[in-house]
Image 1: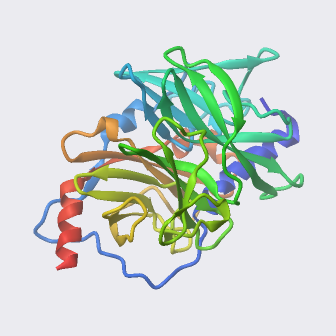
Image 2: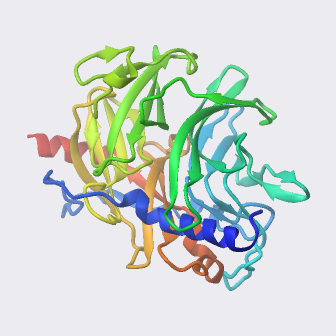
Image 3: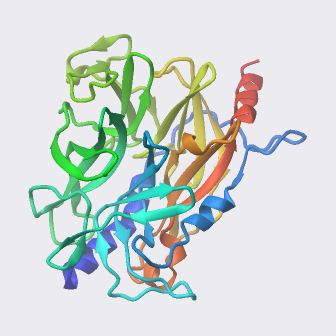
Length: 374
């Protein structure tokens, strides 16, 4: 747990992160509207999952990131970045001494959620800890590889003792044993080309596709690499705009205007990429793109939801899909919320720093794309 002024600074940095993650420039692409009179609603809040994550004690009580991985035994591993533990009162307040850690791992079995706790010096600590005490991990996506869960970890460091002064410095791969979910090792990811890989993974028959973000570009750009199925630590191939190359520097953007974290799924004959509308500054609109191949070209964007919780002080960011909880064509999707500037807001109102969940009607999404194409 971070102490004193450094703890306050780190918490404040994270509260401002919600804005930075969606701060991008606008572009001129056409946005397909959410309104479609006379047709089925495209998305709606998922009240069951919103209630499930209204946790008040016994570990995790708030966080962002909200990435999930289906495990072979039917459980789900949830990965979060900056996490608040402790207890939340019935009036939604929490103590200013609430433990704060850089990342966490939760395990869901049915409607039961367990926080896997680690301790250092009697205090709760992050599930994933880098070798340097001056750095921290925010988790990305992961995949099951034999008896191991491989998880992308994005490593950051503070550059100066002030707000906003942090930077991404590398990506590692964690190995977590199955079914015990014990951390067994952390090693560098195979790529070094300035792209933050592992924000989303897509597993097809022959390949696992590894989506990344050019996070320092504005608007942010999506990039794509791939590895043989079951070989996430093998050398990767990079999409160069027309073909696949073994040279990391050959990678070219496959889409402009994504959020730092986005999510890609394969449904029916198409691939769908879900992101905040990263073409606009402080966007609270979640959009989807569609393509016939994992690398595009992409049709869209189509608006699927506008986060109602946002205002001049609360930002929505980094949506992610959870296909293992789909019911027929209803896809579960989460997004994160955070306060922009007030360091005390997350203690005065715990509901600000919890994910929100919606269900997206994929058949309606496909119909609207098909209608627009005609």
